[in-house]
Length: 105
Image (cartoon, rainbow, N blue to C red; front, side, top):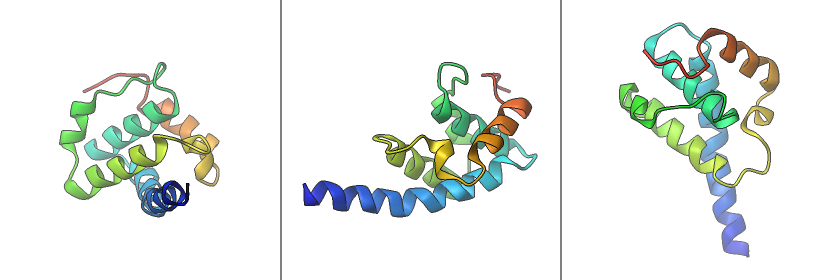
């Protein structure tokens, strides 16, 4: 049980800063930010905001690694991804109004 908790702590230690970086990027107006926004929306609500994993190929290595760290953290979430960021609900609502909805391009 201690091993599982240590692993969870390690995933959280890398995942939380990665999530903060991704949220900052998602709020910008670039091609990569659109991909990151759709990724975050997909974690938030996959049925309403489907995300094609091949879109991760459009990201630079640092953003790609951040997405994987957040995905690992979300594998067995203690809280929903938007609840891990201050003002998360408002931020995710903003993301859904500008680039979500499952549209790719």
